[in-house]
Every structure is written in structure tokens, then in C-alpha cells.
Length: 69
Image (cartoon, rainbow, N blue to C red; front, side, top):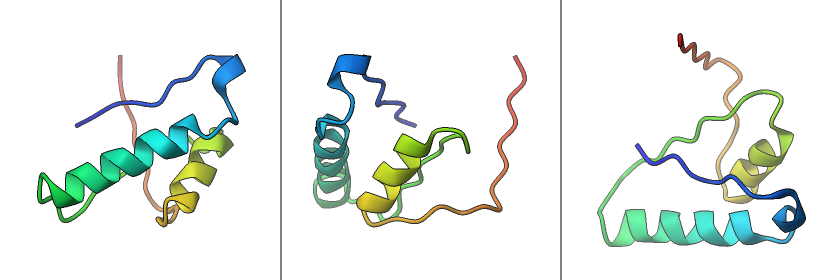
């Protein structure tokens, strides 16, 4: 599992997340041979949801993830 994409406020909205995620996907599929990649975000994180859609994926409303700490 790779956990990435946290940007300081003054870097948000400048396309860095898209560029980083695009390269990560490209490398994962072409060089690592992965067939499927999943992204997890919260329903409140609209920016990440928009990024996931912009990258060509979709949001599944049926997935619920619970973590106990």
C-alpha cells in the first residue's frame, strides 16, 4: 500500500497532485505490471474525489472502511 498526497495549503489547486498521481499510475502499470489500483478517501475529501475522477477512475459509494485506533 502506498499512502501519499498531502499538500500544504499554498500548494493546493496547482496540479501537483494530478502530476504526481499520473506518474504513479504510469509507473505502476507499465514498469511494475500492476493490473488494478484502488484509491481510498473520505466522503468529506472532495478534492481527492475530484482527483480520482480526473485520473479516469470512479467513486464507489458502497465501500465503507472503518479503522480503529
